[in-house]
Image 1: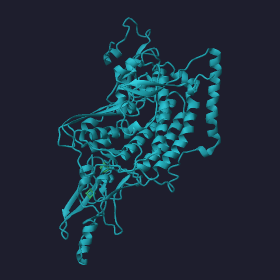
Image 2: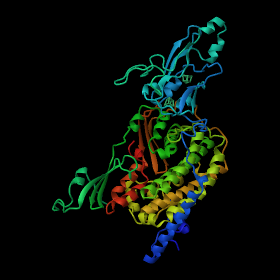
Image 3: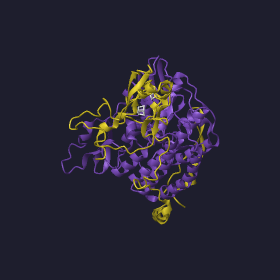
Image 4: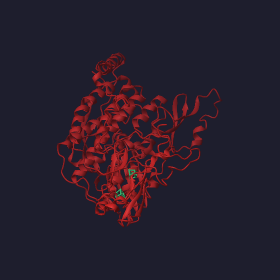
Length: 226
Length: 387
Ligand code: SF4
Ligand code: SF4
């Protein structure tokens, strides 16, 4: 008989904190003399071999994924949190009103929003939506909190750069009104003046564009893969 | 019972002042903070006589991040994402512990569906945590195969979390009032598939590990923790249950959907390393049984009862809530000044801190190799020890 008997566990009922609890008692291991132990030991080693050997023979059991070789076929789950982005409509317009709910919800100050009154609309418009990728913990609270469904998490995950400052950037691609404010402006000529294009590294984004000790200022596009 | 306290000075002092240099076998050794057999930055100062441990004192402070202090300037909803970083293998249960405490304090109702999601997620994660532990235990005791297998089977669970939650480790999913997002449409089918996959694997682990003579001899009778000692140290979870105390909050004060589930609490008989091993091993099977029962009936309803814009204000006073994580009882103390969603003080009673301390009772008299077996069966996650 084997020393370890998986069915050797005993079931019983115990009183714990005034409740009867069904417990399962651990089986005890016993030794039955030298000779028995030697044979049992040998047998258990062979059992181990029997369990592991088939893995060497059937390659279909291999589960390792070869990254980066499988980059072409690798698909992340749609909810995977890897990069915060604005949701944009067909014309590239976002729905962020600049209400700052996400800024307040963020636990570590990774979102900084600059707004201004629009000359045409007279309403709050996002000038810069700064996201500090380098400080973000991907808690998803900003996406969860946004009342206007302006934010989403994208699944692309290859973001390594050589300069941390390149991880601080503007999410919005233009400074101007959100989509529904935009639609309210009827005049064609006025519409053309609504938005000013900005690049991810425009403006006084913290760190980006300024120099640090031992690390000179860099323009957008520099430093990444070079 | 007497409590013996040592200072670090005692450790480096020789036990036998008469013994001359060279003739003495007594010396002092650091296990960690960087050591391949220690999980994370754990430092245990050992006073040894030859290879036998005379005293062991854990030294903390290598991964203190001030999470409790940060909690004093964050709303409880924001604080929850930091609890992922305590015992990261029980991240969802940590989230849940804070959420429950806040719900109880603020009187928030949680829908049955949200409770159902929380329970099945917690059990999936308990299984995941124990699988990782089993792999690392094999690795610590010199077997490499379980390590690969543990990670292989854990990975599948990680995909399940990834699909519904969007994160693999630091998930921030359970919020006061429910859970952040509803389960993915594929969730139930995937979990069902996983249960069918893992059952034969558990049998494989059993054949390879539980019945292996080397493993048995490395665990049997090593580091016996009596029930009295376990209780006096404040050990909880599998460590306490292995010593024969059947305290499991899922049974003793059911929360979530546990009162509707049928399961047994595995307990040990003498509290040695084997018992701690067996209790966790059996808990995996119990978790699988619970997951199967939960898949039987998914309640309909909302997954969240509090709007994201609503501040969850806490009434003035001290609030406490606790639940059973994969390592034991996680208690959350919240002292609130009232009228705000930011607590005045938040304190966490983490299971691993107390469990670690049992090493001071367990280690003396054993060899260093046995100490590794003792440490690995305590299932330590170092970031949980110091917040
Ligand atoms: S992203 Fe959403 S929450 Fe943040 S400012 Fe824009 S509209 Fe408000
Ligand atoms: S995911 Fe969390 S940490 Fe990152 S920007 Fe959003 S709220 Fe801030």
